[in-house]
Each structure stands twice: as structure tokens, then as C-alpha cells.
Length: 186
Image (cartoon, rainbow, N blue to C red; front, side):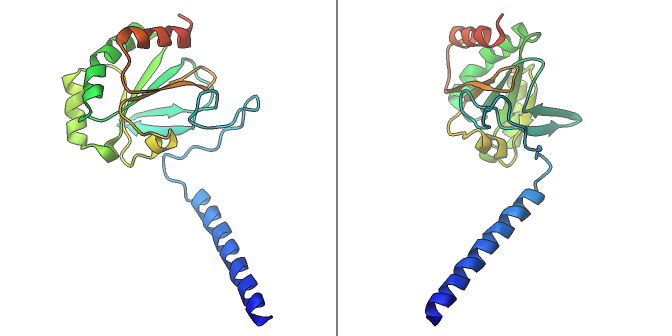
């Protein structure tokens, strides 16, 4: 009887400890944390087509970039690394499309710096003369939020903040442009 009572107290202590840990983690969110978005039209938040895009903020210099919720324009999140051959292949076409559709689409380049070397990433930006905003995901938190697994990964998000599609790897410029046209209605 005493052993059962001791086991029950141990289990209760573990449950209380886990609850306290969860509360502490929520209350000590980092500087990139965004308040949880209200669910819209019954949609759940997640990095999957048809779900609300996970919210985040990345700051580069004095510029602050936010994703989450309604937007003026759809956005493509382009997760990349400087050492990635397919990312190097994709960069010129992505840059041209960003310039062509700048009035109806935002493209955010997100270097997953946790898996790269920032000076190499900065050289990549200069080499390909990227005209769209490039941010550095220093700890890979945003990449993790979007279930990142390969480079490049392009996440297409509509004006309502809903993930339209996730593209793993490189598409031809024509294929990507057709997806942009579908996303923007252009």
C-alpha cells in the first residue's frame, strides 16, 4: 500500500513539474515570438497547405519582417543555404520573378544560418544581387516552425495568411511563375 502511495505521489510530482515547465516556456518566449493568432474560419495553425501559416518576426537591421495573419500581398518564404547547389541554381530565376511581381507579391529570402555560415550567406546575396529582403534565421527556429527538411524550401502563403503550397527543391522558372500567377491571381 505504501509503495502505491509513493508511486502516485511521484506521478503527481512529475505532472506538476511538466505543467510548470510548459507555463515557464510560454512566459519566456524570445524576441522573435509572436502572440498566438486567433484561428480564422476554423483553420488551424501549421506548416501545411490549407492551414494558417505559423507566425514569426525576423529583423534585419532596422527592417522588421512579419508573417502571420492577413497580408496586403501574398508572400513566398524561400528557405536557403549558401552551400546548397539547388539554391544557387534557383537564385537568379527567383530574383527575376521577385522583380517582375513586386507589386503583387512579397518574396522573403530566409537564410537558415544555423546550418550555414553568415559571411558565406552574405556573399551569396551579393553574388546573385538579390533584390528581395533576405533575413537570417540564426538559430533555425523559423525553419523548424515550417518543418524544414531540405534546401531550398519555398512556402507559398496567400493574402489570408493561409499556406497555399510548400515546394521542396527547385522548380523551373516557368513552373514557379505559374504557381505565382495562381497565388496572386495575376
